[in-house]
Image 1: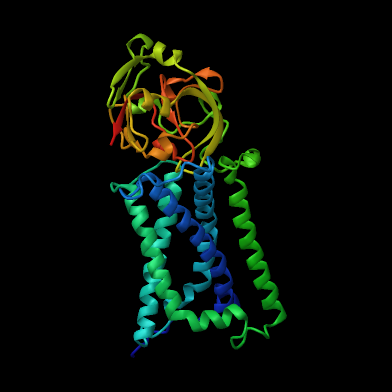
Image 2: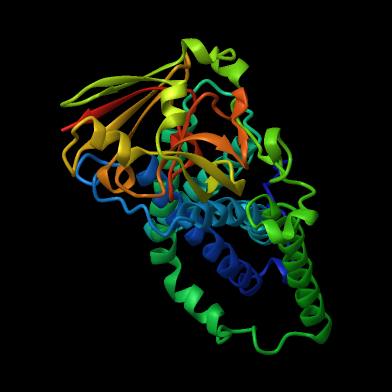
Amino acid sequence: MEQRFSPPVFRGRLHDARTATVIGRWLGLAFAVCFVTGLVSHVVQHPPSWAADELPSRPAWGYRLTQGLHVASGIAAIPLLLAKLWTVYPRLFAWPPVRSLRHALERLSVGVLVAAAVFEVATGLLNTVQWYPWSFSFVPVHYATAWLIIGALVLHLAVKAPEIRAHWTGRSPGTLALPEQDAVDRRSLLAGVGAAVGAVTLTTVGQSFTPLKDLDLLAPRHPDHGPQGLPVNRTAAAAGVGRVPAERYRLVVSGPRPYVLTLDELRALPQHEVELPIACVEGWSRSARWTGVRIRDLLELAGAPPHARVRVESLQLRGGYRVSEMGHEYARDPLTLLALRLNGRELTPDHGYPARVIAPDRPGVLQTKWVGRLEVLS
């Protein structure tokens, strides 16, 4: 006897387009904030050659704000994405699978969007705990996937625009006269999703928004935990740097008038104290008091021209950020230091002893530790 395929039938009102649209608004906002702040982070970390000297060093807390928002919105997107997928998954069983060219484009955009979004939030979350169970380089893949999500989202919105507009305004058939029980259930679902977003945000955002640090229960970093009251991502041991003997340390500064300084000579130069945050791409940040020699003073001793860029080299033997560059806006900013002390005490090895860079509005990965050389670039 011939049997015909019968796709599952879903009659729950909470799987309807109106509910999906409401959750989609929230998810779209989280993705938009995450995408824009991610672009800022990528440009600051890997500036194109034409922009390297144009990146501003102020406000000093700029990167702390944008990267904190980036990670917070990415974490908030996780329960929103799960709720969105729950409301729309019955459509995966719609039959026939393709009804027209427009429907084929819609399903293609949805497939790419869902796969890319799940991949993006999952790998981004693992990055916050610095766990990389894959062989590819996280940063370029994460960046490329973000653009893939935006492209798929634009295509999806273009194809579904009439339906989204109708459900957005509540004017689609059947959305204005819901049974009371269905309306109550929808409100309960949306309240539950909102509570989940609030819970994951409040228990993680304290790693960068320190007034909420006492609620920092689920974040991988606490802003007060670490040597000298400041977290570290990369220890001296992980970087292959032992404690450098003070009498053997030398800072090499190359330029029109190159010179070499011992640690005692560095300490004898005019010292300046600044309060600056250190903000890492994983989402945590913390303000601290730093004391050291201004980079611009070191450049002037080397006869560097006013618009010169600087290459900073670390004593560490390995690592993707062993060498960094800073444009003249950073190099000439009076807040940019070659720091020797943290919160009134000599740097520990994990914080970059004997000297490290601290600059305003700059990612933590570019605040080079264990500095051994400054090179003036024309």
